Every structure is written in C-alpha cells, then in structure tokens.
Image 1 (cartoon, rainbow, N blue to C red):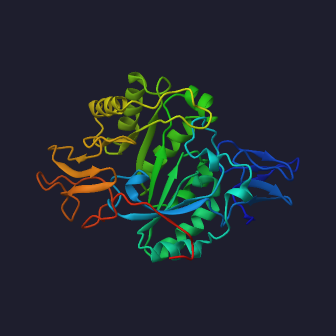
Image 2 (spheres, rainbow, N blue to C red):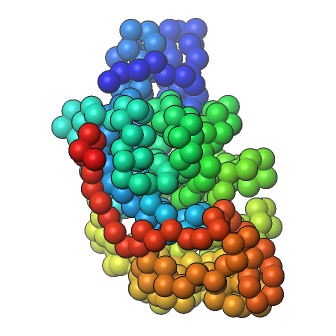
Image 3 (cartoon, one colour):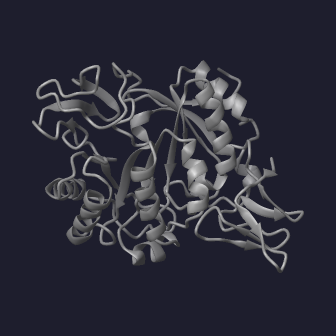
Length: 357
C-alpha cells in the first residue's frame, strides 16, 4: 500500500526532492524515483511498497552474511522491490529492478504479521534484505521497532547508500548491518552500479565510530573488474585504518546474472587469495563466501590462532567460545555479539507464508 514518506523537501518549482539517498531525485507530480518505490503523489512523497513483500523465509543468520552476530540463530528474512543502485550484475534483479510491482509483491506484510510470524517460527530476529531496505526505510523502521518490543534483533543487509540526514533514524532501529562494499574505486561504482563510492565509505565510518550497530562488510569479487591485488590491498588497508582491524570482511563469489553474463564465475582461488591479502594487511576476521572453503569459513582467535567457530556452509560444526565470548585458550575477547551458547538452526531454509505458521 501507499504510505506517507519522510525524508523529502519541497522545491520552489513545486517538485519534491527525496533526501533519503545520495541520488536526491527531484520528482514532479506522478513521478517515481530511481528506486521505483518512492513517488510524488498528490503533492506528497509516498512509499508505494509499505506492507508489501517479495517473499519471506527463515534463514540462518550466517547467510546475511553475519558470522559474529548470534551465530547459529534463525532470522526471518524479507524484502520488497526496487533499489537505489543499478548494479549490472545484481543477483536479485527480478525484484530490485522490478517495474511491475503489483505482479511482484503481496500485501500481507504488515509489521504485526511479520513479527508474529517470526515468533511463531522461533526466529530470533528480522533481516531486511533481498532488495535494499534503505529505500523502504519507513516500513523497515516500523517493523524493527515492533520487533524490539518482542526481544527480536534487527538486521539490515544494505548497500549503505544513504544520506547523513536519514541514517541516524534508519540505523538507530538496527542491531546489526552487513554493508555491501561493492568495489573500491569510483569508476567501478559509476560504471557498474550507477552510484558513488564515497557515500558508502561515509556510512561505514558513521556506523563503526558513531553507533552501537554491529557491522560486517561484504565485497563480491568480479573477475577482471574489482579483484586485482592492488584494489584488494587498498580496500583492506582502508578498513584497517579508517574503521577497525576487527570489522569482519567477507569476500564472496560472482556468478553471471542480469546484465553481466559475459564474465566467468569467480574462481575459488581468487577468494582464498583475497582473504590472504586482507589478513596480511592486518584484518583479524576475514571470510570467504559462496564457495566451499572450511578454512575461510572458520573464526580464528586473532591472538593465538585457535579455531573458535568452524562452519560447514551455514552449519556450525565446532563452537569453542566461552559463555562470555572469549577464546578459551588465551582469554582474548572476540569481537561481536554472542550469546552464552550458539543457536542450532544450521543449513536450513524455510520459505513461509504469513498467517500459515
């Protein structure tokens, strides 16, 4: 349904300027923003996907990916449609670039119904994902605030493409975020994502240094485009110097999709090499994803090297952290959000229909 939107201002010529993301779309009556879901209707900005979802699923939290945030727990994942970037290789292009929203979305996703489903299925939290939750900020915030009242955690899986004036309220409703750092050059963001790198870096700095949100970063490596040693080293050094050495970094594999069908899938050895480079640059927690790599899926103590959390896919096969979240061998506190014991959701994926729990 349509719902009143925040984050806009009225221009002298009557247009509405959206100030949610760096695109700053200026809309005349009847026009939609680049994200497809925010529109000037009746002289007011509205969100056209409030309460409308492209699907619901109970997932392992590791799938987001988040490896240091309540490992082994289940999270109810959902999204809507549209996006404020235009990645040529988008894996979820059928919803992020969907123009026929009525054919893509259903109307069952009220915040009350979503929270009730999470509780009914035994999920420990909500994850706003599939498409970017920044563009449905009002909806995500309402869901998150209700979830917290029921002791559910909240997670944003996001591109981080948000304006400073909106990020405090949006991320204030989130307990964790996985931010997609798509590459480390302005050229890559311009040519392949239709956006800019700097706003994403600004978001990451804000999250790590000015909030209590637990942050992990994902970079999908595309052969020949953003997988050079120099770019991986530059990215890793930036995380080390501008954020913290203890921010987890995930390198994941590209598979041909959407408008980028001419590139081969990322070889597993590229991810292994990227992980080695990031560790050489001093990052404590570096992971590989979308490939079978047990070493790259394991959490090691940065001080003594003890394997603390071993994973096979999303299944935890060894969990050695103390109840306080410390290494049992040397006593180092491991950065993250950990319960006294891990969850046991494992590799399952459970699609759900609201009201059918």
